[in-house]
Image (tube, rainbow, N blue to C red; front, side, top):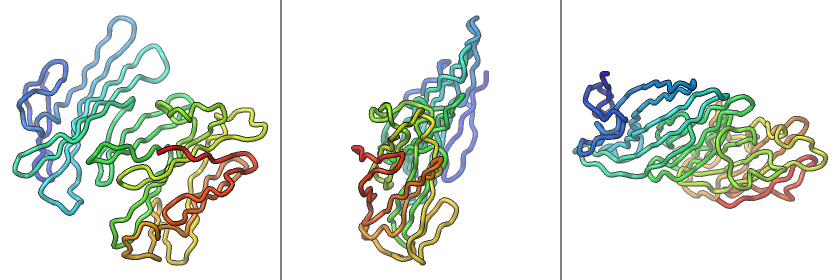
Length: 296
């Protein structure tokens, strides 16, 4: 079988062919851009209808920072096991490298996720776990330079930006029906979802949403629409990005605020104000839900 890869050169991905180990492991001694991209799909049937499909991918981070002399490359190894059960059993291994135009490279981080695929952008590395049956697709965002977790969300990621400033925030909501592993507090019997407020460097605040009253099915109560309620005339919402023109050019994080994060559940709406770059939870209790601050 011919094994294909991609050579990262500037902003281009140039295909090349080469010999790689049959098990798909990365060869020792080759430059990182050659290590990062053996591409192969292998299907096997062991006689009990279990198919093991493996795919090897490579992504190059866009050079969107101030230093244009280097990029970040993520080598990925995805494994899907499909058998006589519903859905699949995914596994994703990723290794990030900083690659200079002079050919020098440095390993930044590595991780293994129960995810189907990974993507790389300017602001984050994203793993995606596709839901099966009643589960909803889950996204996990990581800092591309450090590998630190930034966010988990299901349907919508909202970005808050200060024009002409490096200040940026991410807002996401993960319902209890999301696919993939759960954090410890997400196994609470009344847990319905997790709201996260983060910066490109890491999580700033994380809030557990729990059911109150006579909720018969807390699991089903987690479905919610995530929205933003603008509070100042100069704030501008553009699809999934809130532009804070009221503090244009500011580099003072505590000035981020003046808007509210809205979770629309079936029959109840929770509005959480953002003030001084933080979530103002207030009393934290509503008619059918309560908000509990979780550790970062």
